[in-house]
Length: 451
Image (cartoon, rainbow, N blue to C red; front, side, top):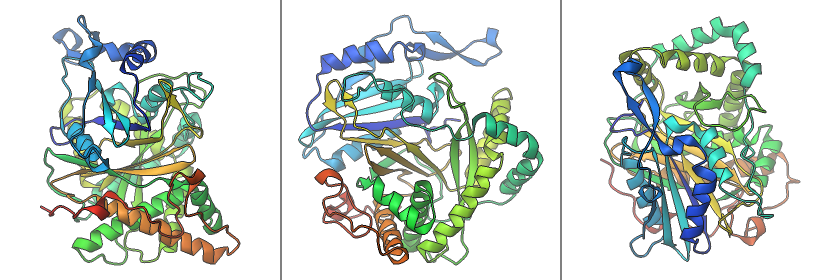
């Protein structure tokens, strides 16, 4: 599925208020990461295996080839870290070596950061999140649960349901394949350069309150805010007609709830129509909730999971045809991962923030990732710079859409507690009912010219 203009790598960032001990990090990786064979192996193809790729141990494996110390250029701020993450997204991994890298940034602001890059063939987002959380400790210095608070969403129940509704689901997928997503400012010919940005932290309790007041889940509220953000972005470059919808490809975890942690890819896909043409946020929420509820009752994810497994046994030209079909008939990849509810520690240092970015196969220009951690949630945007040169506009639109939803919630339920300007625990976590004084990176610099 990888293409030079769309590398299939998962990128994650952890930030800290203090410096990490590089020696302790090396020991931690040896004890907790390298116990997984995949992190000492690389992918090879041989005629004896009918040209199919398989894993082989690297004879001269060196941890130093995969753990690097990188210093950001002055002023070593959030913008500098975003630029570095964009560079990492744009750089292919060496297929002669295990397909992962960690970059330790000792001078990020007044603290430090750790950037992880892992290829999707090692595992899907759920599997890699479990591995990453397995590196961390809880406050009691015990290894964090590899489950990471990530729920099983479909699993065997979804497979059974799919068996009873496969015909209808396949019919829907064929219908998706017949109608291309409209050509908007979010689609275009890709280049090699990528860019990354992220939102302020949003207090998760306040997102839950919005959902309770408006009759939706946390996921419904966040997806509605993303839809509003995409509407805001499109309005900058074109007229958004009423009724316009764009499809997002959403990965769904297919692991049974009590399956032992492991690597590999076990996910299905669903196509979620985003009502960007709806003017009011409450209308967008209503439409999205109805569509999400319908997807949950269907076997779509399980059927696509079966199709993906079948495609893995076919010729590469067939696989690429399906991948390109995904790109023509959708606009973005979007995922929402519930992370740990309590703070975690790496090498004795508290992880202040967790952010990650999903790969964008099918020649899609936009990836939208949401991750909750320790009572807050952040939005991560990964974009092709040739198509979307100003992804911070999407982030600003996300905050504005949450504020609009917060106002709707207050009108629906005036008893909601007013938000605290300081956010969670006085740590500057943004509220969602009214603007805060904290600025996003885009508020301190002009947006780059759109190409």
